[in-house]
Image (cartoon, rainbow, N blue to C red; front, side):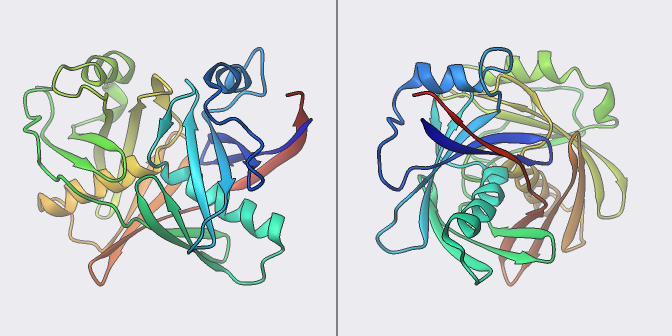
Amino acid sequence: MTNFSKYSSNGNDFIVIDNRDGKQDVHNIEKWQRLCQRNFGIGADGVVFLENSDKYDFHMRYLNADGGEVSMCGNATRAITDFYRRVTDAHNSDFTFTTKSGVYSSGLDGDVIWVHMATIKDEDLYDISGKYEEAIDSMYVNTGVEHCVFMVYDAQEVDVETIGKRIRYDKDFPEGVNSNFIHKIDDGEYRIRTYERGVEGETFACGTGNVAAACMLWDKGHEHSDEIEFQTNGGILFVKRAAEMIYLGGQTKLIYTGEFHD
């Protein structure tokens, strides 16, 4: 039997497992696919493994619901921060950890967990202006995961499933790509919807997608506020910049704990 915790970060839900003893075969794709199935398993958008790190507090390994490992998941970083505090009885509120994407830090501010998004690169590496012709503006950026961001008049009117799937399998992105569609509600406030590869559909929220959207808004001059509020399908997420660093903030909830048969 394996113990697990079920977490939700803005509706983005995860199976979180303490694998510091290395007993879980993270490469057993069929097993993790089965557990993520909502009708036949626990049901989740992905699996998060807490692993040991030689230099930092811990290492986070993340698998999407399809069983494939990806380098980073912003919402999962908040879940594993809370999970680590619980399983280690840590009294401090600031942590440093690694993912395949690099080194990150997280900290608590009341009921909000902030994560320093250290890996932001390849901004405008690809010209994606022709990928969705109805967009007002667009930008490609890698925030630990590859994202396309499209600013539109009304994100509610976008067929996210159809357009997101088409772009996800575009030949220009052999590894696949996530797509985000945003519109402005007010100064510093935006609506966002995200199609996520690996989940292969629209998600309640995507942390790295919100960071990508903020980067586009700042870089293209659409937004001058240093803190942006995003309304996702699963609630509010915040992205802020300070001293040339970018942070993702939001709540995470422990839903329940349990165990499953190996």
